[in-house]
Image (tube, rainbow, N blue to C red):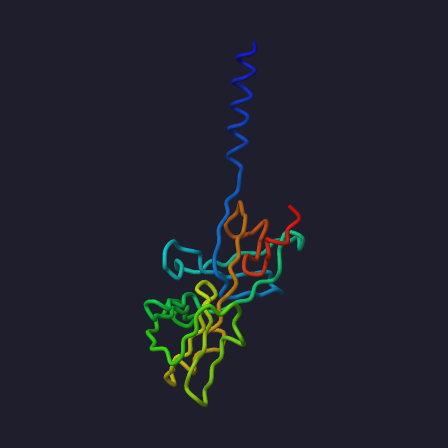
Length: 184
């Protein structure tokens, strides 16, 4: 009888394990607090801006299951080594790669002073790469200067737990959550 009980317990454990949800992560390109919808570009591995198409998910119904509201932006990647910028072009529904020549580049900048800055009078844009702590200013064409201001801002990275891919049960704003201050 003990073998039967052990087998039954093991089967019950296996069946209950199939009900776990999944966790995904991505960079926010649009957020509508009123409609409780967040649109994001799922994270990809390596030096990639992410994977398309963007996903739109419903945020948790319980506000306690969601961290700080995410900020949206179109800047996906600022690669100072290859001197390229990748932005999400919402009008085209695609990534756009912009090659640049820096007018000024500072390394080891701990925090971005007022970046991004779009200076239409001087035809230049200043961006901050938080992953490499670099502040870059480059000359910009009239076409680049005409893009929406949020094109040059990095959207927050969020991580969410779900069972239904269209609805987050929990959502954490990775960018704005300081895990060093957690009570653990």
